[in-house]
Length: 239
Image 1 (cartoon, helix red, strand yellow):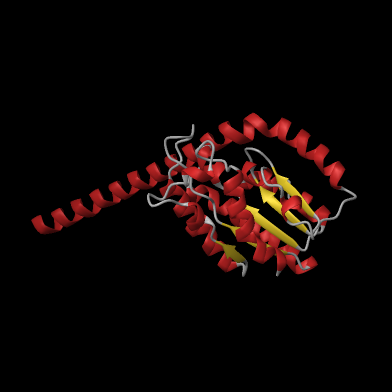
Image 2: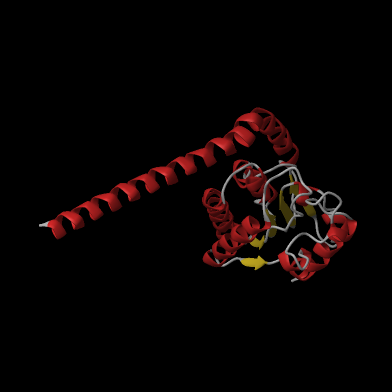
């Protein structure tokens, strides 16, 4: 009887511990959602939609061979200048996130490109979202790109997120988080049969941080950094 009582007590204790851990995991996930919405969705929705709606009107009668789809890193690229044989449209928006790209996906649809180069995700981490919170939004984005590809022949190239210089930006994001995010992105690209272009090793130093000579602020690229990116994509642009 004593042994049975001990076993029952252990089982009950384990159930309570599991319940506490489960509730803590739910609380952590909710905190992620609230942090993300406070830093991006709620604070920027009206201005963001106003800008993108106006932008959409200018894209309505345009066409692109290639779109570059992402955040400020993409926005800083002179893609049309670097690949003059193609009609390139830069769809990079400063501060954008995976869900931001989901909300303006119609821009890609309107331009009817044959290729899309996608890099997104670092701002999700910068705004406080976890990797687990971010990846379902990424899967939704790739689902839409895959569907568009089946309908129009669009080929999507999924680019890794670049490292940053920890301690030199105003964000708490770590390179460990970026590596975890890239693992998830690579798995999603494989799931959808898309080409995953791993730029991360080209930009990381021995400590796994963004090479200092490629950046002016620890996050964004300088001219030399963009040259590395341009050369890495050239074979995919021309294939």
